[in-house]
Image (cartoon, rainbow, N blue to C red; front, side, top):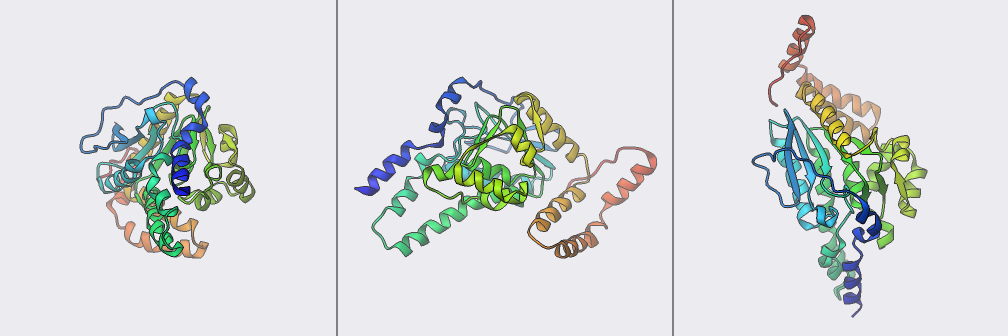
Length: 312
C-alpha cells in the first residue's frame, strides 16, 4: 500500500510541475539547421551548423525536455557516436522548446520506485539500484569521455539533472533569461549524477555549492557568470546558439590533435596533482608532438596562411 502511494506521488512530481506559470509564458525556441544524416534519435535532434561542428538539441519540447528513459540512453549513445566520428571536431549542446530542461522525468522512474519500496531485503534492493544509478552517471560522463569539446548553450530553466548535464560540458554559455537549480532535495534525493562532484571544481566555491544543493534555490544568469558556471551571457536564444556555434567553429578549425589532447589533459589535471598532470601531458605530447599538425601549423605561421588539418 505504501509503495503504491509513493509511486503515485512520484508520478505527479515531475520537475516540470515546478514551473507551470513560467512554462505558460515562455516562447518556443527551435534551431532550424538541417538534420545530420546517420544520427536518428527519439529525444535528440542532431544537426551540422558548420564544418566539423555538430549540434545536439534536446528535443522533447512538449515535455519541457524532461529527461525520460530514452533520453538517458540516447545522450550517452550520441556522444559515443560523435566521439568516434572523424567529421566531428566540436559539439554544441542546446535544446528546443521553452526551456533547456525541466530535469529528470520522475514519472518514468516507477521501476526504481517499485524496487526501493518493495518487500525484498534492503541489501538486495540496494544491489539492484546501484547499477541503475551507475548507468545514469555514465550517460553524462559520456560528455567528458567524448574527445571532442562540448559547448553547452543554456536558455531559460536548467533544473536538476540539467545542471548535472552541463557540468560535464567543457564550455557553458547561457541566455540572459537562464536560471539554474539543483532541485533534487525537493524530491527527497541527493544529486547523484555529477553536480556534487563537478560543480565545486567548476565554481571553486564550496559554500555556494552547498547553499545551492541544500536549499534548491534558483541561481540566475548574472550569478552564474559571476561564479564561473558560465563564461558568457547572450541576450536571447538566437544569439546564444549563434555564439555557441561560433566558438565551436573556431575550435573545429584548430588542430584536432592539439584540441583533443588539451581536453584530455585538462580533465586529468582536475582530478590529480600538478606533478601528476605534468607527467600525464609529457606522456601524451611525446607522441602527439610527432603529429603532422605541428608541421602544418609551423609552415602556416611562416607563410601567414591558415592551416588545414586532416581528420583525426
